[in-house]
Picture 1 (cartoon, rainbow, N blue to C red):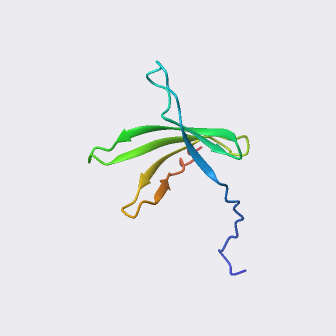
Picture 2: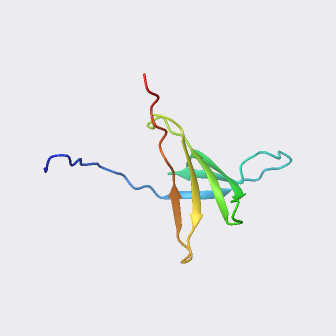
Length: 92
């Protein structure tokens, strides 16, 4: 392996956004996020300052070092991109 190169192994899951019956709860998520029949996240419908709709996503699983906060954005071709940034560690 060339110096400075890292190898990663990813497992791709079939992830579903399932509409959430919010009932009377105003702040409840619009979607539950599931993989293999288990909830591991939630999503809320939002609109950006530019007026573009997106889903604000929170993902959490015991295998994650921390909760992942992201945006799910629909592209022009109907596909969706999940965009997030990792928090930088605080300096000592």
